[in-house]
Amino acid sequence: MDLSPDEENFQGRLLHQAALWDNLELLQELIATGAEVDARDQHNRSALHAAALAERSSCLSALCVGGADVNAKSDDVTGGKTPLHIAAECGHAENVTVLISARADITALTGAGDTALTLAERSRHRHAANVLRNARVKNVDDFSSIIRKRTASLMRGVLTIS
Image 1 (cartoon, rainbow, N blue to C red):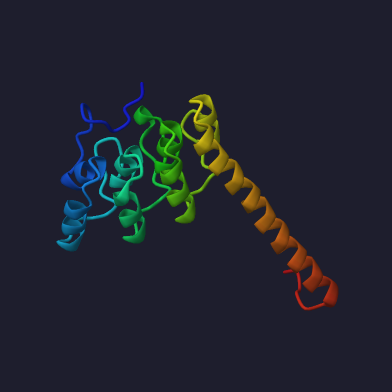
Image 2: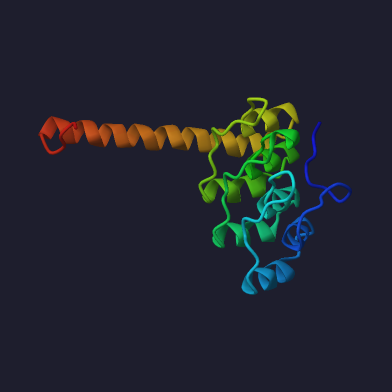
């Protein structure tokens, strides 16, 4: 059963509703007056999960900048998804880009064992899938660069293995 946050079944807090409707002004006011950016609903979904549903969400960036946990997982009833899983599954490439920029884990698995890329591909959202593929390649390139630098340091005797 998929209980992704939507208008009918999303019983979140006001912060969640502001994120769902992409009401940036209300969201900023709530945060300024002490709303917890990582508050969870009964299915462990944060406002970031709700914001991931709104195409080109302005609230998504605000929540990321405000310190929201970009790798927060919903409960098993709702699929154990992160905001990145939701954005990818909905095909919101811009939201996927924002979440990756905020260091969302592109290798995180849902409760069913799917990555965000798998969800985007299954839903035939090629733009979101391409963003995720490019991020995966960049991560591999970054990792390869780190390995090359450390290997070179070891060869020069600068770095020791502990």
